[in-house]
Image (cartoon, rainbow, N blue to C red; front, side):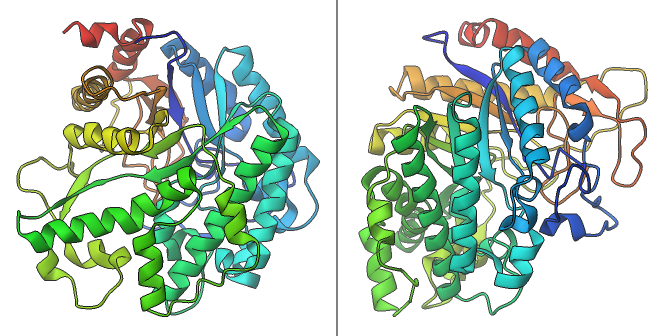
Length: 457
């Protein structure tokens, strides 16, 4: 790599790692009341980082990581999301951050990763209500006041463009309603105002850095038909570029706003909210990347919002392989996304999630030979280097997802992303032993050479 400040690290969410669901003054989130199913755990224990995070930090240090992106659980630090601040919860994260810094690992905070406080979901239906927007801003500003003097990298919302697609109704605390396009746009706008408020507060009051984050899956036209090309472009505009325009230009894309006007969609924009968005500046642009897909215009019903195109027109790409979970592996798409972000917006780019989920078993004695994971990360890192050294993209780091096994986003412990195996299943906690896989030692070599061992091959 070209400098010593390149970040190598790991990303997680609180509900997929922490446990301690009813300890330390924590109130309930929507995840805490979800019951286990045949192929999913409940969310009460996760990997018990609430009690044992230092063990995982030691593995990160041994691997050579110098950054850890984690999430502060809103429910752990604010009673019911809008009540009194929980000093015990705040102190937990204070010690957590200090433990990272002691190991030379730079902390990066994410403020929201889908785990809406249950009270705010039940009373207000989540982010569709301005009361929840206000409660989030209050929470976020308090966390900045508590930690920005020693945490210099921040994001507000994990994968914020998911609030521009049907997934919004699963991740925003929305419990009831008709899931209309109008409601989608109201939630997406409230979330952008929340991001703007925290972003502007950080820049006004601290020397910390903050950027927006997307879940950027490359979506290709299914064919070279002009209609497919148009559908893929419009998806990018409505799901990716309109947010990136807010992060960098302070306004939604003209195409999206024309659609809103033409369709008479009421985004419930209050006085001063667009001005708040107009003041956004970003220090970097970040994203997650796992896979790509295609869109077939013939499958898209007439007249629906582009935000719903992939729900109807998504189609497998016959030219690339899929994981056992149906995610299509496409390292060249990773390079393309890096370029789309940088060449258009000219800000440092930070891929902060990347990985492959695979079912794995451990026999209790032998190392797991996860060459498939090594191949996945090697190919994506080489694609990143090509973007940097052949295309001129400025990249500031690379964070894998869940590089110590955690619950998947659906609560499924069978889907493992880690370079370290955690000995538990969906319904049996076993001994929770941490066991490095072959990829752990591969990553250790890559990081110790600062990527040079891959560049030389």
